[in-house]
Length: 118
Image (cartoon, rainbow, N blue to C red):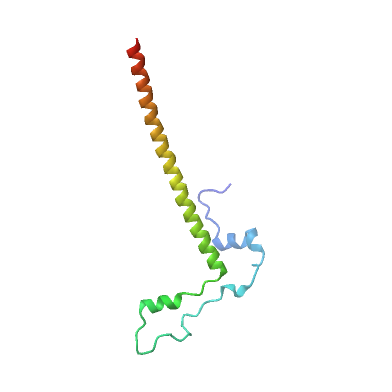
């Protein structure tokens, strides 16, 4: 057992000796290549006119492919299902409250009728 006065081992010593790190990384090592900071693509705006945020937004948009359309459809379907579930939940809550009120009124009327008959 280690004493309280013993120092902890260095991080590198623990990290390199861990079983997970004994195997070389799988996949391409160029997957994490640094991205150059300079923009090599020419601007779509003329040099003498400043680029507006709307032009930047239009340049950032892309043509929607099937994957984008499917993702958008799934998102819209989930939003629709959430809305429908909310409507159903609200309907059941209102029905429960209405039935509770009807039950209270009918029991009260039944007791009133029973008291009057005796």
